[in-house]
Image (tube, rainbow over all chains, first blue to last red; front, side, top):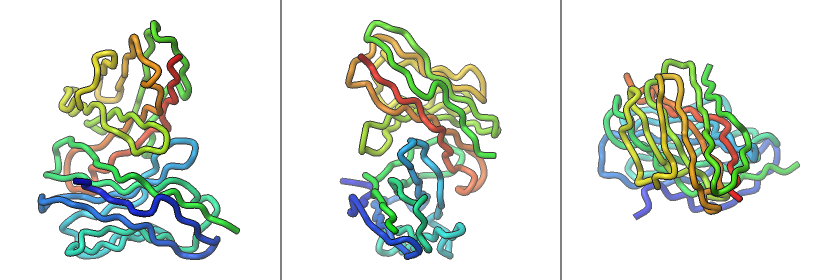
Length: 117
Length: 116
């Protein structure tokens, strides 16, 4: 079974509008972290935002916020006031288990976001 | 500073060549990772080094040989590769101590490898 599911292969949004990128996850571990990365065409994976499974409040970082609904196992990324430079591939990822132990990130298949004028 | 530096940016090699990819970080991170990414796919983990010891090998073929000479440096030695090994190779590092927030993986810009 897929651990991270991103159901939107591609999204369009107009400049200055907000957009939500969906991510659902599947784990039985009570300790996990959820991460969003941006990958422009240049290839670099840029860390955007993270949410821990025990965090009570939704994470925010500038124009990025994470809509964390634990019971529904969803961790949607909201980008406010979209800019042309936001056009990129966006990956949701999860890491399970305790801290202090190097372990793998499981990535979703990604959503390609295109910001239009 | 969250910089992970990878060299070279681009590499073209023949199937009989031996080459190496290099990754460097100066953030004091104690875990380093190699990922392989094919076009339009998510990254796939290859290797993890934790405190300079190989802790995870995701059943990668032996033509890929990782090396961690010190806590700041990670190499990937390539030998007798196949054309299907052409991909973007990403390096990442993370702190590996403390809270979840300090275990974020930071990635380099990658090496685009073409095997002819």
